[in-house]
Image 1 (cartoon, rainbow, N blue to C red):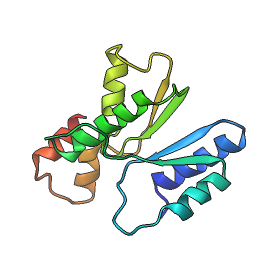
Image 2 (cartoon, one colour; image 1 turned 45 degrees about the horizontal axis):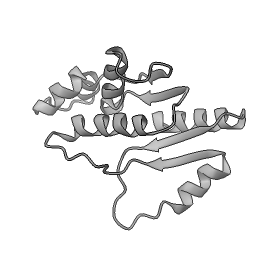
Image 3 (cartoon, rainbow, N blue to C red; image 1 turned 135 degrees about the horizontal axis):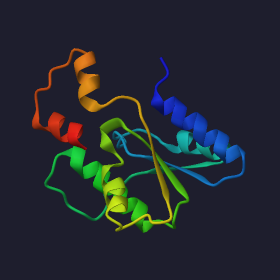
Length: 142
């Protein structure tokens, strides 16, 4: 069954084919031994730059659910200004960027869009999964 990743890829490819500069930021981490070169080439063939979010310079002592959105915020802040940034709602990846924009700290001239799929707790409960960690509540808040 296609998921939001397929929708994001289709949108990125369509927008790139219309002549816009498109960058996909992959935030999932790359397992050891996985070769990204074919994926990078696939996206380049479709006029899309694929960037893998690296570890960055900041050291975190927080759950990944807090770390990853902040690393995305730092990465975005270090780039040339984007006209628009599209996020999926999975794992609250937009939280730090949207919070900074709301507080007037960053992204004044950048449209931040979130493509909604399902809230974290809604997904867990409808998948008959237990809400069994503090991280579940953190993600629900974010």
